[in-house]
Image (cartoon, rainbow, N blue to C red):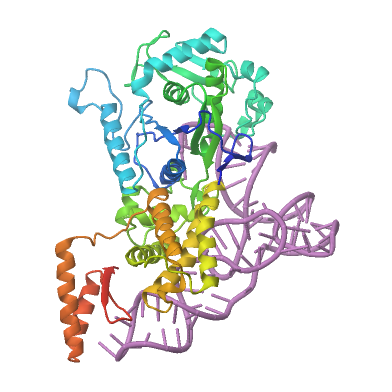
Length: 502
RNA sequence: GGUCCUUUGGCCGAGUGGCUAGGCAAAGCUCUGCAAAAGCUUCUACAGCGGUUCGAAUCCGCUAGGGACCUCCA
């Protein structure tokens, strides 16, 4: 019953032992709010939400920190950022915080749609400029950074001489330093000529005159480099050394590698005990990303308004789709795959709804010992699977094994006393814990409206009367028209009729 | 060019030495006024070649395909 986590740093599954017993410090790289979140972004936030939920279920007190990257050179697509100071009226100018606000709100909205629990602390980069400057000063003091033309760079070569730079991402330092490989790349790096070495990265960048986001620093006006914010905020809220750091695989290098270097120099200790990296969501086998021009934004996904989508998808379908694969495996998106997840989720959730309604008699013994054992085994495995590096697909598979049993109990194909009352109660409890508490899933339909319930019951009664009178024209009219409205009637074995959203 | 990963049935996806993953789709059956839902059954795959082993989808090698990172990136 103890949790193991695959640590990207050691490339091994390791037993999870938190630094402070009973407590976990967890940091996840949050969004850059210069644009709208897409399906690819959904993976880490849902994946680590499940990690957070599971740790909480395991009785850890978790401090979950997820930043908002709101500092940098932001421009909105289709809106010119050029801002010759004073030439335009205040309101005509692009205000970077306007973008930040807009996309932060949108991100929060999406997280709510996905039923992701809010982090304990959601610090912004712009709110921690002082901490970042302090950290950079400390790195300079330690002799691992140098100032050039108002910018500050981290001295990777010096750091690599005594530290294992490149270990997390499996990089060979010599290659990075000599950087011959860069000949292959097409893009030229900004400020490259200022660096002592190509592998060095910026801690602070001097702001050009037209740059809107700028802060005063000991080195002149500028803005923080991309990597320093995470180091500064993680240190501030989780301490020099904390338990878990999560993010997408694509952040391993250079972002997380640099984070390790900065924090190690400042705090004289490795910042993170367990590094976790989720794999990418691909589309036609290719990573979803801005530069590939293949992104599906979350708003498009929820509305179905995208050429690659055949329909709209409910956030819970997306959540379920993501949980159906292991977080370290690549996950290929297609409208078809998502549609199949939608059906699967609906089936599982309906079985769960039925399970919740099953009345358990007290202290009944199992009549079907073989089935009893199977069910107990499936239920017992669920936690073991999650303990094994969060194997959510296996937990779901076990639940699907039990779905036909639940449905059969309802239809009395399996007598309720086949299973002991103890096992039935355990099944109810395990389903609730895993589906709702750990996986954070919710029913997709809003069918719990009392008035709607009453109206539906009335229609069902009328239809039943019509059927009894063999007035099938009326009964079919009710069924077919409801179906056109997206409501499905289900005639059940016992003569009752239930309904649900299609 | 370097580093690393990956290739599972019509589709999506678990699985790392021996035992049915699971889902979707499809087909048949049961139930049903018809249908849907539900239940039962069928579909038994691991890129290719070679090796290790009593035994390999699972380990090793080679070949072929795909991908990620090396550059903003979840």
